[in-house]
Length: 178
Image 1 (cartoon, rainbow, N blue to C red):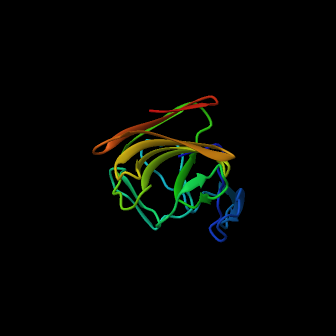
Image 2 (spheres, one colour):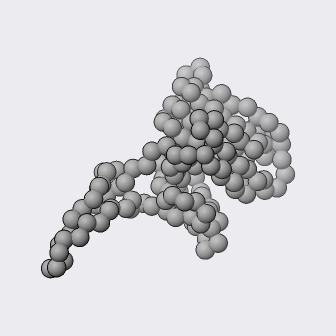
Image 3 (tube, rainbow, N blue to C red):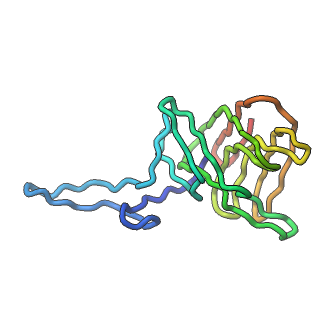
């Protein structure tokens, strides 16, 4: 959920970066800033968010509850042995230039092994970390962290029952998962 950069997207061409545009309305020209077309606003998050990899479906309830349905077999993982390199799971990103914390109650309807609800720190396709409530190979919802710097290093912590509260903290260049 954290991205140190933020692209503004054009209404006419997704992915194109926009700046300021000038519009004339019979009176005088007025300069306005373009905003991201795919900008999503969630209460208590000070920046707009945007998708990297679109989900199968998503919904934001009036009280700010975000529900995401990911395509089957979508994931973020770079195998240290080179067998797998995937980065196709949907991620909703926002810029976090300074110290901050993101807390969320995470509830996952696990269907298949490795299905997960995730809080993610993203810098680039080969530098990111994710904090997960993931379905383990043993069929148990498990707290898992994955840190990727060129290759992924994952750590399975412990099995949990029910929804969990997860927190991602950023202080300068350090990140922590709680």
